[in-house]
Length: 282
Ligand SMILES: CN(C)C(=N)NCCC[C@H](N)C(=O)O
Image 1 (cartoon, protein in one colour):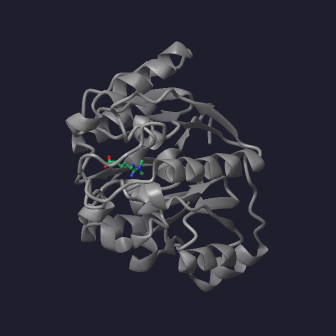
Image 2 (tube, helix red, strand yellow):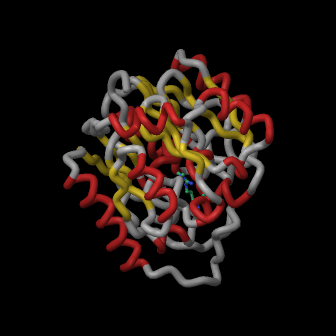
């Protein structure tokens, strides 16, 4: 942190803004295929514990005053619990997800139908994209991941549909296959990220756009510390990301540990389970 930023952060009282989230209960959650390096179908998943942990995340949102809506999980789609992948929602406009792998293909239309039934303005995506897994709204920019899941051609599609500038970022480490495994938006123009997950060029872009970002260590990233949900003040995240929690406290945020170890067996944590429904400007 620069000297100026450190002084400013001490003066800053972070302000939470009430959010609306969409979540999908982990009724059918399991690891029965492998589409990322965290998934091992030979390693058993405790479904009851996954449910308890997911309930803990839900309770934390409700205790903070956020609103939560639910989508019905589809049998046979064990990753549907990762609602963040279901779409991207900005100013009430919804870009549907189009999944990279067949194993998750039916989730895109299921989420799209949920939005259509509720009268949202929707666009059925032409190009592969995995929703907020790779699209993160940070102030003036839509940060857009590519490299493993989202097709780079989707970035132009999103830019046109949402009418906001897209900053494309290339992911290079398969452990951090979605942007939201390597970068979290804390508030408008403030982010935290793990540089090692990005190409050299994308690291340069991030340095220029966010000179006062919180820099995560590899250890923070490995426990999915960046897969965090912030309301501008409270940051829900894995409790094992202790260094990142200290950094957040120093900047005036309130980190809240939420244990989601069963979901991590599929390569997801708090942010993956949470799709923000942005109605107006955020
Ligand atoms: C940040 N988000 C939304 C995620 N990283 N999503 C988790 C997806 C996990 C799933 N097994 C998959 O590999 O697609």
